Image (cartoon, rainbow, N blue to C red; front, side):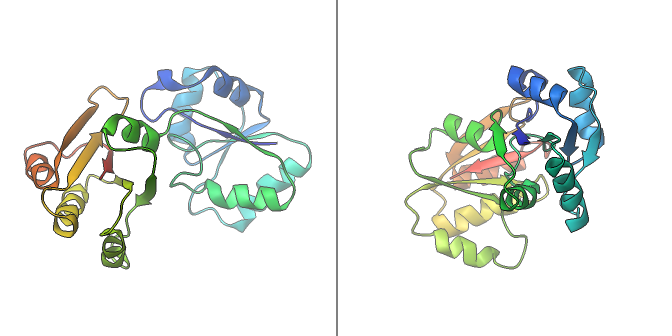
Length: 217
């Protein structure tokens, strides 16, 4: 069995009872960064073998995990934060496991996408998640394809490009387009800023460039 175990996006108290149990019972844990995941496992007294599996892992690493699963072992796959498969490398392993007829089961939990969306005040009955926007190629085309959207868009953004992205939202949808910026979700300095795109552009100039951002517009 391959379990996709959701982990906290900031606050360690957001780990579920079931998630902790599955991690403790798994034959091994596949994670993006053993150091980052080690903080979680130490906090909950989880002592299982850990195997790194990240965006640079090749086919050989996938095959290694699949071989173990075929032998009847149980793997708990986790990301650095949140639900595996959302803007992280889990997709390739999940697809390969399904192709081999290996059962895949979700262990639900924290998700930055949904946390930001449900607190944004934007309509939630129809939304599109785009992850991180392209840095260069395809970025302009993507914005152009969204100009006539009638649904909510949710994206992730880094501290290095948040100003640029919000400015481009204002440029493509107008300065009065509603935008919500969520920063440091579930952490000590969690905050939401809701306003127009123009107001968000101005607000960012007066705020510290720290943390991870989710933008809803």
